[in-house]
Amino acid sequence: MKKSLNGKVVIVTGATSGIGKAVAYEFASQGAIIILAARTVENLKVVCTDINSSGGTAYYVKTDVRVVHECENLIKQTLKFCGKIDILINNAGISMRARFEELDLIVIKELMDTNFYGAIYCTKYALPHILQQKGSIINISSIAGLTPLPGRTGYCASKHALNGFFETLRLENRNHELHILIVHPGFTNTNIRKSALNKFGLPQEFIPRIEEKMMTSEEVALRIRKATILRKEKILLTVKGKLSVWLFSHFPKNTEKLILRDFTKEPDSPG
Image (cartoon, rainbow, N blue to C red; front, side, top):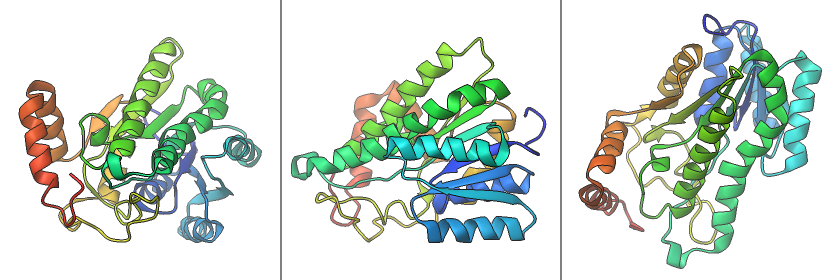
């Protein structure tokens, strides 16, 4: 894997949009066999057909990562299709946008079930097979897993939890050649903001930021692919994202003021 992804079996959750879809195409372009996982069969069929018709190899398994037995089934079906698992990409995730005091608690549960527990469930069943291959577990976290963001309490909590879990899992397996990569994208041009949950737990259906200037999902996928081959443990993406993390680690109070000022510029800001 240090040299090539050709022939590697790669599971991608949340594979029908945004970073997950871009990663599926990027890894497939390098000869990886892709197992696509998401909740909507129609969307899975579109991506799967596109990869296969372009000369790649892909299968799909309808999977709601919030459901334990569906995550177990994803691993079983992958082994049935391919006989091994080299890489698991825990990408499935949702966001939110609301002040905690106004928030229905169902939103926090939805964020944790999808962003955190979904990754844990998939990892639990895939881990023995990935260890056999001395493979990789790649987790799509966020700059929000390293800094606070107003109006995103549940999102930040889920990403901080993800970081803590996988950093510890990496340490537990330090002597077993398990590669764990944690990816911290900054603002990325995806549909995650449009589908972010409002205080009632419903998609907000609008985008509060200008996405054209953001890093594309394809660029994120390229960075992930390179980091996987090099077996890096962490990558931070976007100049603004890296700067935010550095400033927060050195000057937390001043950085909090800057973050708050930035987020109050959003339309109908919850910050």
